[in-house]
Length: 255
Image (cartoon, rainbow, N blue to C red):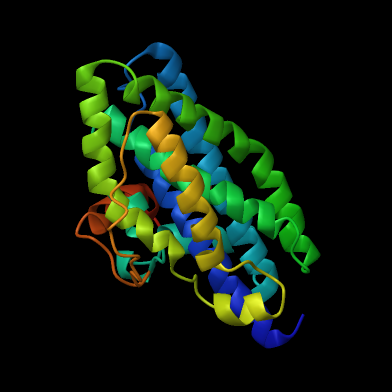
């Protein structure tokens, strides 16, 4: 792979990893607070999976940059300021109620399933291999979130109302899934990564159909956002401070 593509792909992978890390942290906030014991365990495991997937993407970025992949992920996770993260605003928003978290998980998982399917066919074999590995677990995540969207959307008047309110709040943020990741345009031209805009078109059709099946109505008039991944909500700094608090007490500590 050309050096320029290596550098571009490292930025792309770090953005993917940041999405997984931040969403995993938000999901972990349900530990001990999920509506039933089974979900307390399931959602905690799901959060661990997301964070584990972030680690895989960070390690692949380290390989591309010639960094030590045993220490590079920790540097990125624990010693960057919030403004340096490249995650979507969608994943950094507060967890809200159970309807909000499960609906967000579904919107993100449905898009990630399409991206991982495409990345598993990348011309860059290490990327294809990691994507295929992650995809196996993410298919479970998607089935899990789909089940909750159906259950709550078609449940009681209250649960359906909460799901619709969550959809109305999250849908504008989900439109940012269409925006290209760092370095994506050159990498797509080289056959290394898919086009986010193309994936979004498929995602939009599949998701709106599933939401309708769940008794929910997406606002299709929402503009497709080009949110810059350098722009964050006021909620991210507090999340990152919490995430990094122990590591920053003693940056030289070994674990």
